[in-house]
Image (cartoon, rainbow, N blue to C red; front, side, top):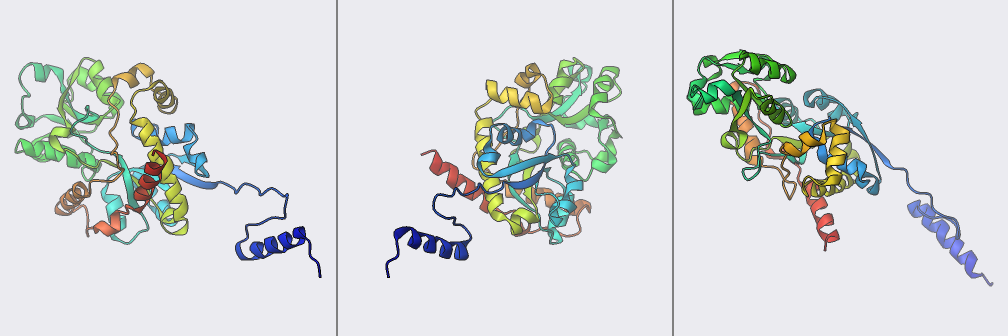
Length: 344
């Protein structure tokens, strides 16, 4: 029996189709696979710059991802993240995240999203009333006794509370030695001018805005109080940790590629993208300090353990999360291998 070549090819292709589901008859083009849709928590802040860059430069699309940005606070995002309703959180270190991890929730820190770099400009710091500083009334943290410090009671269990308490401790003080006041960031412009607040802790672009007002000065930097602290993180939920880790690896490649572009600095293209997504004027963007991202994408585990120990001592956490419960380095390690190979 004589079987022509095309018949053999068709038989082989049908067998492959049965085994792998990935074949078509000769001459028929394969359809492109549908992009994986991901819901990613992102806000219009400078620290989300790599998300904006990855979206605008097509880095997510290169990895076969269709990313939808969703606005949410870190704490509110934890339950839907663990349940697979959200996929990625660009989050702030919090007791809510650590508590969920300690209880076995399917959420993990998977990469750095911003830290307090000791060799960088000041992205995060403490602002004080100009007249107090220039009048010599606020030369050290010890002189914060009796002063009006901006801090919401609800925020005392957060990273903001941790940072402020570390500052007070330098001067031998606690929150009880100060007058805590709740003033929003926009309202602080007027409050510093009227002298109704004495100290605030914030990040860019509000540092530049408050200093530009003429009534506040950058008094101490976060580097002086919590050097190398892991302030911000990328968090994966159940979808990327268990259901589709391949999409998690591809997201990390796109994210890390965007970090590399961000770290090129205030280029014309980066300024254009950040202005579009943050709504900030390019003049302010050029003035402001941009957040620092680690070159290898890893996190400072010890700083998180220090934060967790503080939260335990304060009674903000019932049980500590182990390193294995809060940190999964496999995704960033994969991305580093891919990007390292592509750059050679």
